[in-house]
Image 1 (cartoon, rainbow, N blue to C red):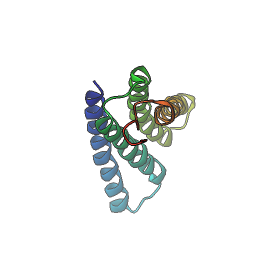
Image 2 (cartoon, rainbow, N blue to C red):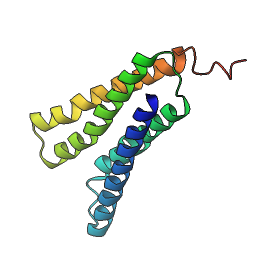
Image 3 (cartoon, rainbow, N blue to C red):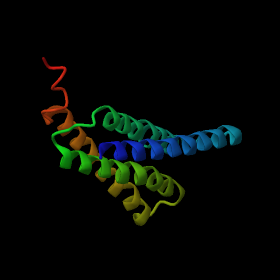
Image 4 (cartoon, rainbow, N blue to C red):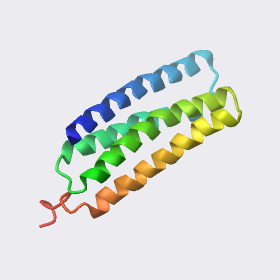
Length: 132
């Protein structure tokens, strides 16, 4: 089951990698660097973080905290998937709706980070073979 989450986290991360590269190329071509914060968040949150979570679930298939892992994967996909787009919207048109489109997914992403820490520190099976 975790392999499925791994696959989707890595696939979405790859899409973000392309989006981040296209935004970076566009900024360089136009010599307009106003989108650097959104560009950086797309690459760090969308590409790097989601890919790292995907690798984690690929390597650690057997987790004792399966429900926590499922919730973490979903919150990472939702928060990491929507937050960079909310940030882009907010940079284009700053209003309460676009601010919420940025902040709410960021809160979901924060929950994903907390759940990931819970897995790393409290899953009994995670490092069972290496703790000997």
